[in-house]
Length: 189
Length: 189
DNA sequence: GGCCGCATGTAACACGTTACATGATTGG
DNA sequence: CCAATCATGTAACGTGTTACATGCGGCC
Image 1 (cartoon, each protein chain N blue to C red):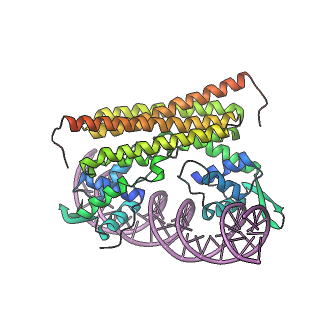
Image 2: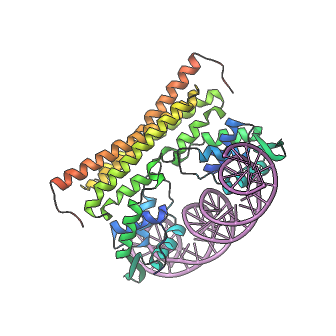
Image 3: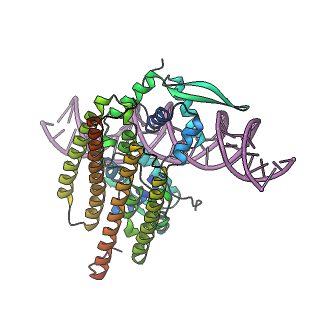
């Protein structure tokens, strides 16, 4: 009921969250985003509630009334169509999946020459420190939650691998920069 | 003239492109996005032209008329304020820079259990093949363009490092999956 | 019993996308 | 000279964000 269009990135992800957590409330879905170490999706109420309602309207999820005390809410779970749609969304191999994901740090470093020369290394150092701090917290968090969930463990490893690769690369950039200033050629300001 | 608000990700990037290429036309800016191996920004006319006009309205870029034959266009370059704004955008260390960037593949693999068990490895294999194909093309392209630009080289290395790390991780996931099916425990659907 | 966090929403706004429109230029 | 591509835009649309509104629950 309702014509099939391909799911957006957030819709697919939310469908995945509900699939994993079902039955669950929209608020639990939100928490999944707000608690995530990634800051890409805000998980704001304004995105999640309307989205979940949209999913229900297109028959991908269904909900039961549910009350805790006199507070009313709804528990959502996937329908058969929902599970099919999720599987389809996952397995449709799009270019974004195969190509390099966006990286705000890479973008900034690409235009590092817009910074005064003496600020460039300082910037990279502060970023590096921040990333290492992030890594520490991520690892703590990961140890804390590894409830034997093999899947969660795999996911965390993937995210950390990427993060570490970024850290290593940042160090490379710093080394290149130091080398350049040590043996100065003509520099374009 | 025009009040300073912090630049969005696309605005900062476009400012960077103009800084790098100046003087240049909006179309050249678009090409930078459409030619990029990353698919995150479409670089559609509908995004770039209005954005560049917005930048000019806020005094970050300035343009001169410019004609090739009877076709008219504008050549843009950064103003002093523009260069300052770019430097500020780069050096303001936000959480998105420090945390793990979004990864459509990671997200999909997180909900791999929504796929019929027999499809999971097949999916990962096809993704892996696609990523390796992408890597080959990226490397060709990179060799082709390495006009001794140390910076471009560094950037390419960063992107490739991330990409390779993703490939390695995908292999890990496949190995874990194979192991699991070889020595089956209780599996959730 | 008042305050703060939980939980569910809604409204206005900004921004990027697709699709469309238009004219110039180049190639067969 | 006709078609395809280059190049510059505009319009409608969808969707995510911030900010606001509301009410319940626990705690101090």
